[in-house]
Amino acid sequence: MQLLKIIPRITYKMIVEESGFLHVLENKAHVMADRGFKHIDELLMPKSNMLIRPPSVSIKNKNSKQDVKHSKRIASLRIHIERVISRIREYAVLEPHACVHSSLL
Image (cartoon, rainbow, N blue to C red; front, side, top):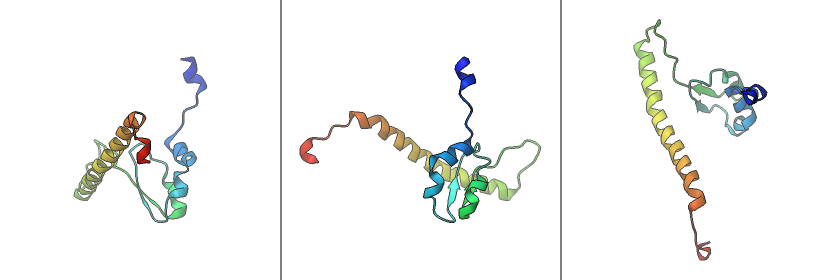
């Protein structure tokens, strides 16, 4: 418990700012992010980039047909992103165990 008091919490906004991700983005790029990345719109504005993330679910407000259609489209794209992330993780797991004969290099 003492360790948790020492380490400050880092926000998604801070992660984006410190990662260098914003410097490699082209102008007018679309950035897909998870629901947690709520306050990074202002970081994307200087290059006219657009944040795409799933809408927050609310029991009180019923979504319009257009909102539902938009949510389904985002979900269909997220599946592909999850596959890419999975492949990157698999590669990172296999990398230390990969053997390449020196004659092939």
